[in-house]
Amino acid sequence: MRKKKPLPLLENIEITAVAAEGKALARVDDFVVFVPYVVPGDVVDLQITRKKHHYAEAEAVAHHKDGKGRTQPFCQHFGVCGGCKWQCLDYGEQIRWKQQQVEDALTRIAKVELPAITPILGSNKTSEYRNKLEFGFSDKRWLTRQEIASGVEYEQGGVGFHPQGSFDKILPIERCHLMDDVNNRLRNFVRDYAREHGLSLYNAREHEGLLRGMMLRLSNTGELMVVMQFCFGDEEAAMTLMQSIHEAFPEVSSLLWVDNQKLNDTWGDLEVHTFSGTDFIYLAMGDLRFKVGPKSFYQTNTEQAEVLYGVAREFAALTGSELVYDLYTGTGTIANFVARGARQVVGIEYVPEAIEDAKENSRLNNIDNTLFYAGDMKDILTQDFINRHGRPDVIITDPPRAGMHTDVVDAILFAAPKRIVYVSCNPATQARDLALLDEAYEVTRIQPVDMFPHTQHVENVVLLERRA
Image 1 (cartoon, rainbow, N blue to C red):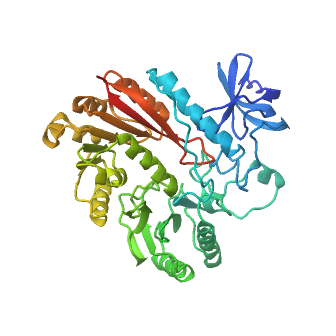
Image 2 (image 1 turned 135 degrees about the vertical axis):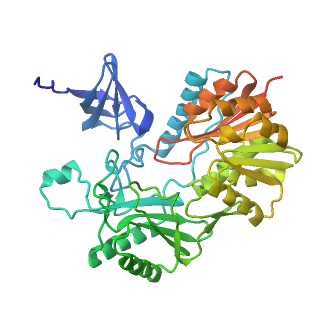
Image 3 (image 1 turned 60 degrees about the vertical axis):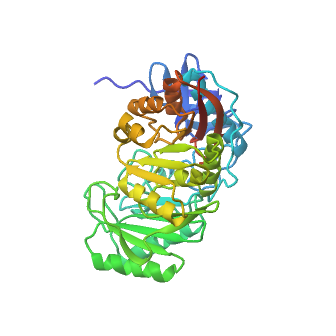
């Protein structure tokens, strides 16, 4: 066999920009090098780890100069767990680059006439901003290169996050800064209890082990939900753990469990059991309250969600006489948020349980001018549906990262609303859809919103108005 040619070490390379997936980039000769955990202006030595014709991937192995925006990461797990990849970049620089990311996507992909992009709305909280976290258990521990090289014998297994590219190993998390410290106290309590009582941790290859996962939801109303995911072999031991959590954390208002014997960690199709308290919590947004269950979708940055939906409501410019379609409505958060300014709001969502939550949230807030329908968007939003319910004056659409199906775009063009408010978590697919809508609509306003500090993700709201 031919030996592979050793990959080169590049010395004194300046990082010039941020790139996709939380990485940064440098330009070397005629190709681009993508590098994680560095910032523009850094001068580093790069060890190439993968090389193609026009690009390469590398790791920074020596650091010679700090870029202007570099800052000290605050998390002990930075660079290993795979989350919060921009902790080493000053927050002001983060949102500047996110603004650039939106501009690049819309200009390079959409290729339509654009107005000036309004400055991005940053998050007031850059840590402890999430209302939901999910942790996994594994009997196999992820070891860093430094830990492997140390020769120290580490305890196997733990509770934490799966590092990128590893489905069967867990990086134990001692402290996570994404949520109030209650997440650390709860997670570490369960970890210590499992050690002391010999509870088995899940093995993803053998599909056995009692402790499989845990999810936390923390509300701005003071309520706390914990869902323990088990793979039952010893139900009695699981219920004893649940009782211990109940006694140690009286602030938990919704303590739930699910038995997942499936070959994957998803449990949206499984029955969730209540151990104590209610099977839901409430989250507040403005003067509204939203009932959120263990399977409900709700924006994970509570404070910024209100900012984001406030932009959508402003762009909709409702006067009280409009028929509004809210596409991909989820649990009806946007629909109910704008309903008091509209004549009627019709929400459509794929997940039936989410539609039931949407209806309940309307009842909870004494909103009687909403209608909700469950089904695949391209199957529900048809010309017949539009003819039956009326042509909307405004369409608000908040699709998943993949953007809108072309059938949905065609249905929107047939509906011919005066205004379209497009909320997106992926400016690239949003840009693609704007190009499809350009024949009948012009982009008149653009407002990026940062929902996820220390990550590369950015939300963007675009207003389209029907051409004369």
